[in-house]
Image (tube, rainbow, N blue to C red):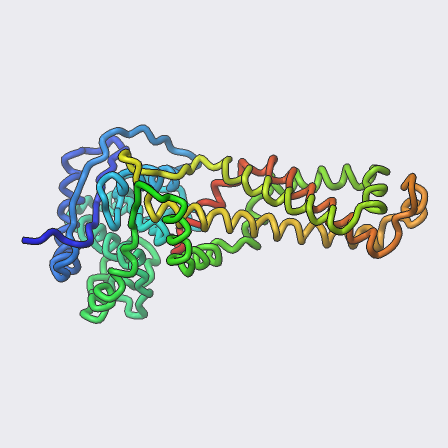
Length: 390
């Protein structure tokens, strides 16, 4: 029998103190329905399981950080040559929007995280029911895999792709239509994109970015750089502190009066380049290659989307501070000081105000990136997990 073209890996990652045998049986039992409804209907798709038995991950903020699992998953996915990977764990994943999350699908990496922590009724003070937990897990697995393949939510409350309002809604979500199976069959070749190379890595990266540009831009759009600025308070506070301090220095006004537009533009571009590099390097999320040196397509796509998102986030911050400084210089700052502080000539013209605003905003971008690296993990999370939390 020929090998399947597309391989779905399901990795058990038990980090809690529960019964290992029980956890394995729960996952394997849930996979029977997953295989029956999806894998067995698609000759080109196979499902294989593995176990992650080194619980070196540590919790933070009431749960385990999803980025740690993705980092682990990218390595496993590269080594095993998988098209998709679903990591099933028994611990809570740290949510970003709601009180808890059941799964986090990441289309840009083709990795989904699923937790069994809250699926058994005994978690909610009811009688323990392993069969019910198994059926719930089956539904979450299919739902998360559907998101990886870009299936839309269904308006039918009994459909497996209906929005999951809470754990109890999983009990009625049992229907999976032939139309949805046909959609998976159609989108599978397009979404299972993880090619790799051992040589010509720059050429491979350029070709990958060109081919996957819609996915990259969609990830950037979903990350929403405008909202991300508000999610990085340390970066904003650092940038504003530096700008406010510099604004009241006579040398800054001298520079605004004497610098050319080209000089200010050059400084701004350098600040953007350094700021983007600093924020990107501050991530604990590092690019992953296979042990044999293969560079994975998903790594390139993730890195490109993250870099573009960071650059646009800094651009939003630059526009915010440039506008604020221009307003301050044009309306609030005393004009006699604009004329008396500079030692060469006054800096009270419109051009002086524009150059001053751009110069200060550029320095704000640079200083904000240095001080805001602690906020960077929220940026990565928004880039990776394009779908809403389940």
